[in-house]
Length: 97
Image 1 (cartoon, helix red, strand yellow):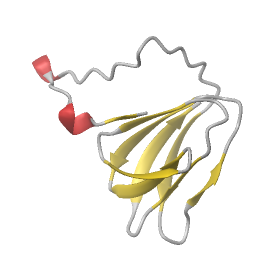
Image 2 (cartoon, one colour):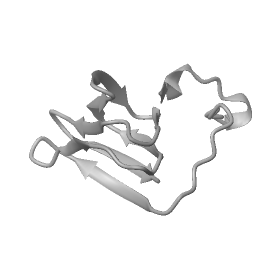
Image 3 (cartoon, one colour):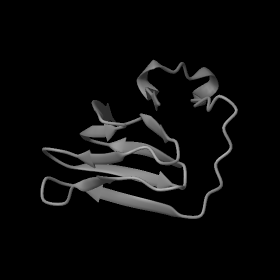
Image 4 (cartoon, one colour):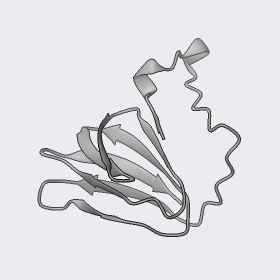
Protein backbone atom coordinates (compact mmCIF):
# COMPACT_ATOMS: atom_id res chain seq x y z
CA UNK A 1 0.00 0.00 0.00
CA UNK A 2 1.26 3.49 -0.85
CA UNK A 3 -0.05 6.52 1.03
CA UNK A 4 0.60 9.66 -1.03
CA UNK A 5 1.75 12.43 1.29
CA UNK A 6 0.79 15.17 -1.18
CA UNK A 7 -2.83 13.95 -1.05
CA UNK A 8 -3.13 14.29 2.74
CA UNK A 9 -4.52 17.52 4.13
CA UNK A 10 -2.40 19.07 6.87
CA UNK A 11 -4.69 20.68 9.46
CA UNK A 12 -2.59 22.65 11.94
CA UNK A 13 0.63 21.58 10.20
CA UNK A 14 -0.02 17.90 11.00
CA UNK A 15 0.00 15.23 8.26
CA UNK A 16 -1.72 12.03 9.51
CA UNK A 17 -0.79 8.81 7.68
CA UNK A 18 -3.64 6.40 8.48
CA UNK A 19 -2.44 2.80 8.70
CA UNK A 20 -5.86 1.09 8.71
CA UNK A 21 -5.43 -0.54 12.14
CA UNK A 22 -2.08 -2.21 11.35
CA UNK A 23 0.40 -2.89 14.10
CA UNK A 24 4.07 -2.97 13.16
CA UNK A 25 6.73 -3.95 15.65
CA UNK A 26 9.81 -1.86 14.90
CA UNK A 27 13.04 -3.81 15.26
CA UNK A 28 15.15 -1.46 13.17
CA UNK A 29 15.11 2.16 12.00
CA UNK A 30 17.40 2.98 9.08
CA UNK A 31 17.95 6.08 6.94
CA UNK A 32 18.92 5.01 3.43
CA UNK A 33 20.15 6.76 0.31
CA UNK A 34 19.51 4.97 -2.96
CA UNK A 35 21.25 5.96 -6.20
CA UNK A 36 21.51 4.38 -9.66
CA UNK A 37 24.72 2.65 -8.53
CA UNK A 38 23.19 1.56 -5.22
CA UNK A 39 19.68 0.18 -5.85
CA UNK A 40 17.77 -1.59 -3.08
CA UNK A 41 17.23 -4.92 -4.81
CA UNK A 42 13.87 -6.70 -4.58
CA UNK A 43 13.58 -9.16 -1.71
CA UNK A 44 11.03 -10.43 0.82
CA UNK A 45 10.98 -11.34 4.51
CA UNK A 46 8.66 -12.08 7.41
CA UNK A 47 8.82 -8.62 9.03
CA UNK A 48 6.36 -5.91 7.89
CA UNK A 49 7.97 -2.55 7.11
CA UNK A 50 7.18 1.12 6.68
CA UNK A 51 9.20 3.13 4.17
CA UNK A 52 8.94 6.92 4.35
CA UNK A 53 10.32 8.73 1.31
CA UNK A 54 12.06 11.91 2.51
CA UNK A 55 13.23 13.32 -0.83
CA UNK A 56 13.70 12.40 -4.45
CA UNK A 57 11.74 10.15 -6.78
CA UNK A 58 12.10 6.41 -7.27
CA UNK A 59 10.56 3.32 -8.82
CA UNK A 60 9.15 1.01 -6.17
CA UNK A 61 8.68 -2.68 -6.92
CA UNK A 62 5.87 -3.97 -4.71
CA UNK A 63 4.41 -7.45 -5.16
CA UNK A 64 5.55 -7.61 -8.78
CA UNK A 65 4.17 -4.20 -9.77
CA UNK A 66 6.10 -0.96 -10.28
CA UNK A 67 5.02 2.37 -8.81
CA UNK A 68 6.56 5.83 -8.71
CA UNK A 69 7.11 7.22 -5.21
CA UNK A 70 8.42 10.61 -4.13
CA UNK A 71 9.07 12.76 -1.08
CA UNK A 72 6.24 12.57 1.47
CA UNK A 73 4.98 9.12 0.40
CA UNK A 74 4.65 6.29 2.91
CA UNK A 75 4.93 2.69 1.72
CA UNK A 76 3.35 -0.03 3.86
CA UNK A 77 4.87 -3.46 3.17
CA UNK A 78 3.20 -6.59 4.47
CA UNK A 79 5.21 -9.73 5.36
CA UNK A 80 6.42 -11.90 2.47
CA UNK A 81 5.65 -9.25 -0.18
CA UNK A 82 8.46 -8.77 -2.71
CA UNK A 83 9.75 -5.17 -2.56
CA UNK A 84 12.67 -3.08 -3.84
CA UNK A 85 13.58 0.48 -4.81
CA UNK A 86 15.63 1.99 -7.64
CA UNK A 87 16.13 5.50 -8.96
CA UNK A 88 17.71 7.38 -11.84
CA UNK A 89 18.91 10.14 -9.49
CA UNK A 90 18.95 9.95 -5.69
CA UNK A 91 16.27 9.18 -3.13
CA UNK A 92 16.56 9.45 0.66
CA UNK A 93 14.17 7.37 2.73
CA UNK A 94 13.54 5.85 6.15
CA UNK A 95 12.91 2.16 6.77
CA UNK A 96 11.12 1.04 9.93
CA UNK A 97 10.58 -2.66 10.34
